[in-house]
Length: 152
Image 1 (cartoon, helix red, strand yellow):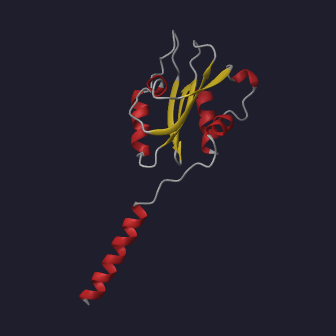
Image 2: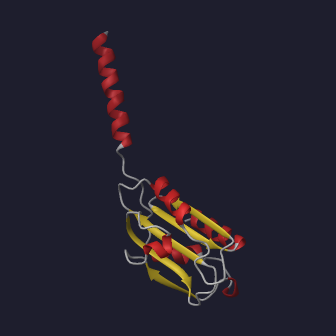
Image 3: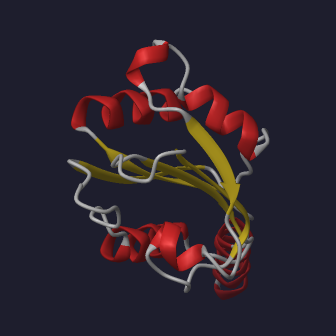
């Protein structure tokens, strides 16, 4: 009886261990495609003229509010005119990154008042598989972008 119980316990432990070591899912699209898709359904006059910028070690604190996130790649989509409170940043995190902890770091440190004389009404940090999105803009626009992101 002890042998059967020991064998069962060993198998259960192996299942838990193997399940716990499974890598996180990867969103199977480029970050450029993510950006394009989150703006789907917006009229031309609903968004400012936007430009995409690669997020690097030199500018990550400006875009994310922190330099403590281990990411593979990231893109910021912001207005060409810097006095408009609008920012969408998407980043693909590393394999060993705790996504929930990374989202919390961004949420705590993102600066919705980083623009001159304006502040974003709403800040959203969410994720899908290995991609985190930071949205800072007006409430209605932020919700629509988030909905598009969740539907990827």
